[in-house]
Structure formats: structure tokens, C-alpha cells
Amino acid sequence: MDRPLGITVSRHILDSQHIHPQATGELSSLLIELIVAAKTISAEVNMAGLADILGMSGKMNIQGEHVQKLDEFANNTIKRRMARCGYISVMTSEEEADAIPVAEGYEGKYTLAFDPLDGSSNIDVNVSIGTIFSIHRALNGGTPGSENDLLQKGSEQVAAGYIIYGSSSMLVYSTGEGVHGFTLDPSVGEFYLSHPDIKMPHKSKYFSVNEGNYHYWDDPVRNYIEYLKETDKKTGRPYSGRYIGSLVADFHRNLIAGGIFLYPRDNKNPAKKTGKLRLLYEAAPLAFIAEQASGRAITDECQDILDIEPYDLHQRVPLIIGCKHDVDMVQEFLAGKK
Ligand code: AHG
Ligand code: MN
Ligand code: MN
Image 1 (cartoon, rainbow, N blue to C red):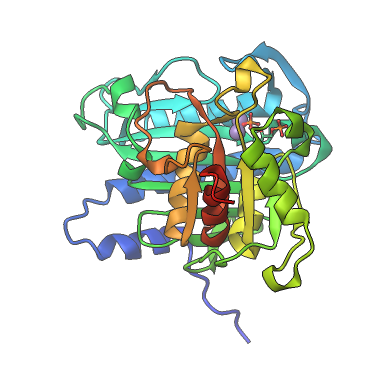
Image 2 (cartoon, rainbow, N blue to C red):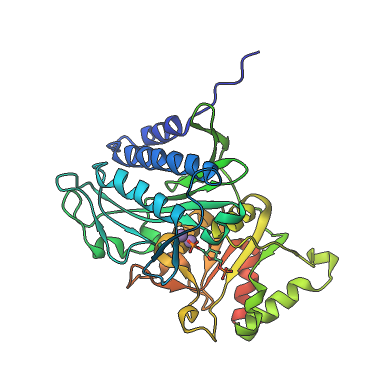
């Protein structure tokens, strides 16, 4: 009995392109190039324990964080491939202070923002990590792009997604027509459609937050987490706590099983006074996915993540993201109504 013919991600992207007669195929080709980079990273991540690629590179990045060898490998893999893909005009990466130009003569009509490897603190302990990406239309496609092309609202994204390198490698992406998940068959080197049209459950069963920061949060956030821990069978409380410390892994669990993730501002640490997570290549792409999957994403000032007008490539935002029922509930606490 032949296995059903799996739908590859390339097939899925091209099929969704055909829905738009005016589509030129450039976004499809961009995504397919990015997926080749992701497969390269996935292979390296899975061999990290054997290759000499665990541990620190000895360098610091713009965030003031130690750069892991795998961070650097992932960053270079994406940068080198996308600089000559011909579909983008400028890039920004968590690992680079400034906007990254593409190769001369290869300027395309889109822009790319990416976190080459999210969850770096988990690399050496073999916990799931991932790559997050966000794509916008360049302001003047086909010409060399600049920082202004990258500082666009999340609601203007044309595509976003992530690849999670875990028990299996999965690609989850959206071009604004729902969220679709693909699982890598490493023996073939292909991503096959495994989770068509993903929708977040309306209500969570997990909450995901680093409670080590409890004393640094504002009262409404503390009150909300205490509320989740109270027993009330009618409202399905207490919720279970799950925190991996890789945003992409915590988000993926919540997307599939139902959960709410919070990384609030930290009132004691100047580096995290507006939260820890970066808007352009962490919060905005995942907010795009969340909303496409019927979830929500807001700041602790109740602003929709996708409505934030960026002012800096690496600006940080407090992030509350997950099932709509739960984000709405947090909003009640933040507005002092609970
Ligand atoms: P990155 O590895 O790209 O720097 O991202 C790490 C982020 C995110 O993945 C995770 O949710 C968060 O850092 C964990 O922060 P804490 O260790 O402070 O909880
Ligand atoms: Mn990250
Ligand atoms: Mn990272």
C-alpha cells in the first residue's frame, strides 16, 4: 500500500500562489529559498552534539548577549543565501546591529527580518530551538533597501513563520490565508504538509511565563497569574504551567494545544524595562501567526502587537500572546477590571 502522496511545502506555496492570478511568484520563490536555509540549519542543529558547534563563539551581539556557535552558523546560513536570492532588498537579523544589504544587482521587492536561532540558552541542553522570520513589501522594491523598509508595522507583513528544530523539525507559516504546518522528512529532505489550517483553541490549558521574574512585574500581571492558579473547575483552573525558555517552542505548544505566553516588562532590569522580546523578528511574526490562527497578541498596555509602529530594528516589547479568550482575560486585568 503506497503512502499517500505528501504535499510538499513547495507544492503548497505554489498552489496558494495560483489563488492570486496577479502573483508573480517572487514571494513563493523567496519562501522556498528561506526553507533551503532552514533545512541546512536543521541538519546542523541535529548534528550539533557531534560537530564542534556547541557552546560559545566568543563573540557578543548587539543585544549584549554571548553569541553561540550555532547562532552564528544559522545567521550566516540565512544571510549568505538570502543576499543573493534576488527577492529581497534588505534584511535585519537579531545578530546584526545594522540593516544588512543584499548583493548588488540582486535587489528584490521584499524585506526579511529574522531571528536566526531563537532559544539559544537551550542549545547545549538539547531543548527545542527555532528560526523566526517576517517578510514585508519593500517601499521601493528592486532598489537597495534601508532601515525604513524594515520599520513597518506587523499588520503590513505579507508572510511570517518559524521553523522549530525539535523532536522533528517543523515549518509553520502564513501568507495571510491561514496557518499551515509542515514536518521535515529528513530521509527525503522535504517538508510535508502535516497540520493544514491550524487554529488555536479558543481557551488555553497552559500558561507560559518565567516566574523567576515575578517580583519585577506590575501588579495586574501578578494578579492574573495568581488567578490562573486558583481552583475553579467551571473555568478550568488551575491552568498547568509550561515554560521552555525558547519562545518558538513555547509558542508552538500553545498554538497546537492551547496556551497563553507572557513576557511582561521587568521593572527592575533597565535592559528589560520594555520587555525582553524583540518586535521585528520575534513578537510581530508570531503575532501574525497567532491572529491568522484565531489567537491574539498584545503588549501590557493592551496595544495589539501588529499595530505597533516600529522605531528601531531591535526594539523590545512586552508580549502577551495566545488563545483569544485568555489574551482578552489578561486585557481585563491590565485594564483594572479584574
Ligand atoms: P534568543 O535565544 O533568540 O535570544 O531568544 C531567547 C528568548 C526567547 O526565546 C525566550 O522566550 C526568552 O528569551 C527566554 O528568556 P528568559 O530566559 O529570560 O526567560
Ligand atoms: Mn529569540
Ligand atoms: Mn536568537
